[in-house]
Image (cartoon, rainbow, N blue to C red; front, top):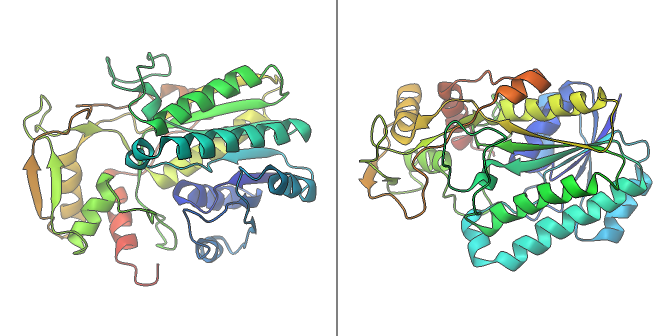
Length: 338
């Protein structure tokens, strides 16, 4: 059984990835300071898998505390690195916090990975590194335009660090650039619990239907798209989790070290905001009180991925439908004991 450390493993994508790793017979050790997550997630993971992973409550900026984890847990085969702040609006208001947390944490982690000669490293990146898109679909060769937020900048810098550090660290790296993760585990035991009031679309849809919010603002109704609303690439979080396990397996089978692959993880299809709302209403029978308004400044009209590299290298492709995404998100929203 291969032993994997998952930083930020109590978060939204991290917890789903922990579940998938366990179901693929990996032993998982979680590092998470719980500043943006809840300890109850562990019980959700146990309910799904029957396994209670070991959790170290450590902030990656605490290098001494981080080092102790790796000294205690020997024979680590790989690291999946999620631990980072991720809210775009917050990053605009608090850029120094984002740079300190996201970049310092990564640097500390990489120095320890080098020290312990850990061969496989998967980095949680984002399609936000592309900035405002000039051409569609977005491939890994698409030009990176200027970042639109400090959060996005930390992902660009993170990828640059891996690209340059590969000459110094005898490891194999993958940066997964994912598009718009949505949904929850089908069991309803784990899902998305934003640490701040959510601005991303699906929690606003489910929250409005559940009465948390008075109405859903749809920014853009007369754009040059098939129904006038923005187009995005949504991917079920369970499919996304499976991509991380596939990435680890791919790295384990590679002989060459000092490599860094960059791979898009998306559905490969664009879905409009109104199509997503309609799928929710059709699947759940709930009506969403919405108001169509002008697009927000800086919003990209359309973006979706070319995921052919993930299909080719990782033997991965998404399985869940838009209806799966919205039903699982709703079941999580209404779960009383979450």
